[in-house]
Structures are given as C-alpha cells and as structure tokens.
Image 1: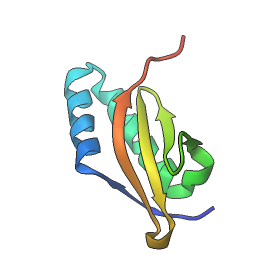
Image 2: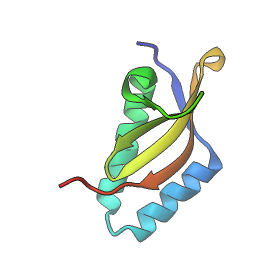
Image 3: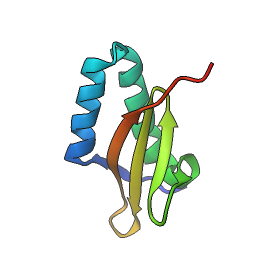
Length: 88
C-alpha cells in the first residue's frame, strides 16, 4: 500500500459539479466523491480496475471516476467522472 495525493483535473471537477447539481442525489454524490478520494489516497492500485494502458477506474455508486497513477510524483490524477446506474 502506497499513500498518494489525489488531484482532480478541472474537467473532473466540472463533471462532479454538474452531476451534483443535476442528479437529485447530492448527498450520495458527495459521499461517493469522498469515498473515491479516500480509497485512491489509501491504495489506488488495490481499489482501481484497469481500463486500457495506464488508465484505471473506480466505482463508488453513483459515481465512476477514471484516473491515472503518477508514481514519480506520488499522485493519483482523476481525469473524468460519470454517474453510473445503481444496481438493484
């Protein structure tokens, strides 16, 4: 486990704001964004799932974040965010 600093690109921040305002689930969105930050800080490799070379994803419903790990800088960079369907 390697602790890293999580930074959100401007696009991801804008997507979070748009989802928060438009989803009608502001409390769930807030909790999910905090969970994403927490888990990526703790152990991004463990909590993330590989997508394509260098890109990973993490789902904390109702959110899904795409991120990259920058090992030389001890960073996790969240690139984009989307809302995911809740599983019944």
